[in-house]
Image (tube, rainbow, N blue to C red):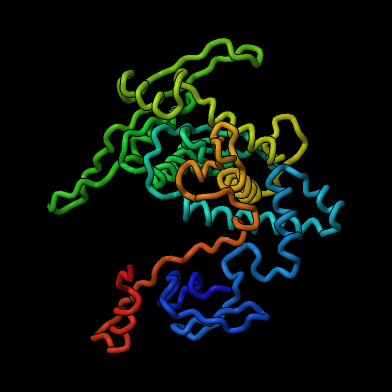
Amino acid sequence: MDPATTFCPRLACPARGQTGQGNIGIHSRKDKRFLCTACHKTFSATKGTAFYRLRTATETITLVVTLLAHGCPPQAIVAAFGFDERTVRRWMARGGGQGQAVQEHLVEQPRDLGQVQADEIRGKKQGGIVWMALAMMVKTRLWLGGEVSEQRDMPLIRRLIERVKRCAARRPLLVCTDGLVSYIRAIRETFREPAHTGQGGRPRLRPWRNVLIAQVVKRYERRRVVETERRIIDGTPARVETLRRRSQGDGVINTAYIERLNATFRARLAALTRRGRALARRTVTLQHGMYLIGTVYNFCTPHASLAHASGGTTPAMAAGITDHCWTVQELLSFHVPPPRWTPPKQRGRPSHAFKRLIERWCEDHG
C-alpha cells in the first residue's frame, strides 16, 4: 500500500484523481483501506478496479478472466472450477467494463496514427443479428476501439469514426475501409473543427487537412473472391502511397490487418463465429466481450509482427503507451483516475474556505 501513488476516487472530493499531494494516508493495512484528508472519507484499495467488493481470491478471478479473454467457453469454466454460470458472466462483465475504462483513458489520446483500417463483423444474438465495427492502427497493430449495434447503419459507423478521431492527432491520416458507403460521409463529417471568426452565430466547420480515404471493394461469386477493386476517394495516389508505405511497407491498399484482427475476435468471442450455435442474449454482452478481448490484445498479448531482439512487444508498447507487457491482473487492477474537480457554480460571493479549496486543488501542481 503506497499512499504516494494513490488518489481519492470519490467524485465529491475536490482532490479526486490527484496523486502525490499528501492527502492520502493508510487507514487500515489489514482491511487495505486508505484515508483521504481532503474529504475525510476512507476507501478500499480495490475501489475503481474489477476486484472491488469481490470475495474470491484475486488469482482465481484473474485466471477465469484470462480464460474468457482467450475464448474458453463459460460452460467449461463452470465445469472446471465449480462456479455458478452467473458468477462467471458477472466477472466477464466486470472485466469488460474495466477494459473499456482503461481503453478510453490510455488509448484514446491524440497520436500520429498514420494509417487506420476499419471493418465490421456480423454476430448473432437471440432474436436477430448484431454488428460490431472495429478500427485499428496499422503500424503498431493497436486496436483503437469498437462499437456494437443491431443495425449496420450510419450511426454505428459515425460512433466508430468518432472514437478514431479521439485517438488521432492533426497529422496526415489514411483511412482504409471496405466498400460501405457510410464510411465516406462519416469520415468527412467527423474530422472537422469549428473555425471561430469572432462573429456571432454558429461557426463554420472546417475539415482537417490531409485526411485521405481509400476503399477496397471485393466481388464474390460462390463465396469466393473473384475481383478486388481499390478506390481512392479523397487524396492523390502519390500521397496515399506515401502514407501506406510509411505504415505498412511494401504492398498495396488493403484491409488485411483489420481482417486479421477480426479473425482474433471471432476466435475468442463465440457469438461472432460464422457457423456456430452460440448466441448472445444481449447486445451489452458483446460489448463487454469486445472490450475484454481488445484490451487483453492491446496490453497483454505480444504481437509476432512487432517482435524485437529484446523480446515480445505488445501493440500498446509499440504505440508508446506502456513500457512492458502487462499481465491480466495488472489490467484488471489498473486505477483509472476520475476527471479533475471543477468548482460548482454558486450565487453570491464565495467564502474564504471555498477560495482556499480552489487554490489548493484547481491549480496546476506540476
